[in-house]
Length: 533
Image (cartoon, rainbow, N blue to C red):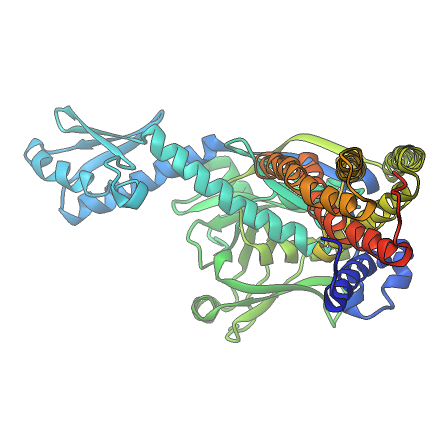
């Protein structure tokens, strides 16, 4: 156990050295580190509780999702019954779509047609017998279509996953470092953005559905007339989205091109007046639709609609056939940039509302760092003193190994680009105790071997060998607990689990390779007759 080949000893030393070097960027100012090569710039990212930032808890509008689904069912029922030429009326009543067949003789055709729009939920391996629509024959030519609870839960799950993806895109476009975006419960999304002290901008970005549509303006009636006597069929009255602007627009409901056909959107400046604008580009299908619409409507204004509000309504001066254009509307530089972010990230499938909001100031974060450091220093000093007083020279060896162990933890965290939170600091401090505990087990085992009559060298060798199983058992069980905390926990709990898990791995490495290598080197050098433990 105490013999190391030169290659094995060199491998242990190089491994510890390289991992420790990964922690070096954390001890230099960020401005200095940015001048280094890209590969050497990996640092530990401080969490929200250490550097301050914004915290939002968003709730998905499940009522909107249900209403949207009922409208889809109504439209699907219309198509299905029109295909079999069954005259009918349809209306949404509460949580159901009611279909009334006008001719009783057509009821036999209506039932199978309506049941045809219901699809299996697609359970495990596609064996689910549940359907996404319940079709009930109420008699007298009336059918009631409802959404089963299981189908609603599945739709909500898919919507929340899609929303998380879009929220991630929007937040990442801000250029923030290591945002935390997680699902919480069945219909909520947790967003933590360290270093962002302006939650209002974050709320504006995440609170907008960002459904962009290009529609024609209805010029047959003025907004005042439409507001007084109602908009013509196929049109609606929309407000301007500019704060303080009370302008109204009569806009046709037919969508020429939807925001889903956009492939890119970038902020820029109009070369004529230097005003901020947003340049956009369509995909091939959207470009063809836009070209056809602008060719057929030269001289007519068209509206750029964002979340049912008009961003601008320019007049089409000439056909726009290049598949790209620009949006102007007295934007500020930040407003143009935020709109471009929204368009690039895509529209949310349902509105999100802020149910909880917190802002952690950098001063509070610095206070947490100071207190965390103080706790780490006090705990480490007490451990070092205890080991020196109890085990003397071997305690000194253990302290060296523990110091390298802590550096290796920070090195691995830096290599992973992990986020360090206040509970993460607690995990590091706890790891110091676990690392020392491993050495205590080894040294106490050596003492037992000495009391059993073994010589110094054989006692040391037996101490390392026989303590191995005990230390592995204790560290494996602790690692399992850390893994459970990581996969089940959220936010700060995960930060604690990460540092604890990494600390356990580095502890086993330092206790059974590094400490043993140090002791083996001392034994070869001194050839001791007694053991100073």
